[in-house]
Length: 391
Image (cartoon, rainbow, N blue to C red; front, side, top):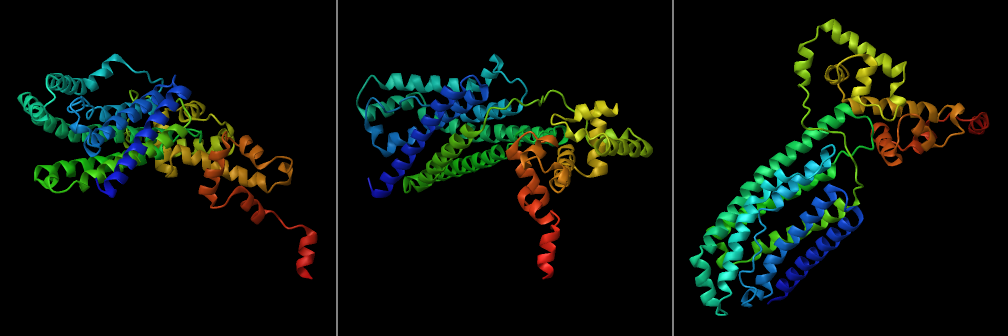
């Protein structure tokens, strides 16, 4: 082996170690949460797939007992990732037996792999092992598995991304609580996984045209990329605190446009004015648990209609409308001497924010300043300071 190959092996081994470590930590610390269980299993499968290449690069494929060792988990990653996305975005998610159907392809290919392995264990002669494997169409079945891996990756990737988009639409249109996760990191992860899928497809094509008979570099790139995926998924996924969302995919709201089509112009204007009154006079935004349903109840209107009017007339999502009003109230109180006895966080908690981290993030995104910077720039100068400047 050359030096680059040794370095490649080290990178893959470190990726496997990282995946195993975070998978075990997830089960030990968050074992009762389905989303964390699925993430741990996802990491373990990544480790298994990464280990497959080491059979060849470390020369283990020449070991009679390891040749054709059954590791047919190529079609496991895709449904696991999809179920993981669902577990993060579905209210009261629980794994159901029917979801085992997602793993039927894995079971079938694994049964074939076990059959090949048991058949080839009748001899230690490597050439004879290869002949026995071919009598069971090993290479043909492996090609089918590779192609299905790409197709399944596309299908489950689209389903996962659509699911995440649906959740984020619901979040911004229905929930004001900034503690709710927006899952930007999950969106990033899906994009990264899409990159891995693209690399896999390209590599399979290169192998088809005979590129692999001369070079191995394209598979090195793929498995290094896979190791990076394990690092990102393990570290980022572990750092995310468990959160029980209220989203339910089975409850689908009509589109905002269809909701508005059912209203007359004067009805839309009336509801807009009532929303403004609820915010500016009734101060509903001070409720940290305010959501679209509770606002609709306050207005005695349909949640779908309220959401549609907010999007159309205010040109903002419900979440943005409420949190911007909360920021305005924080700004007012930061420069009001009547609230000097409260800390910045104390003011934030009184104005509807219930998370320090999300408050600072939202305040800066709206104003471009931190709360302290805003206070420093907008607090009136004292008479003494003004007189010093005149001198």
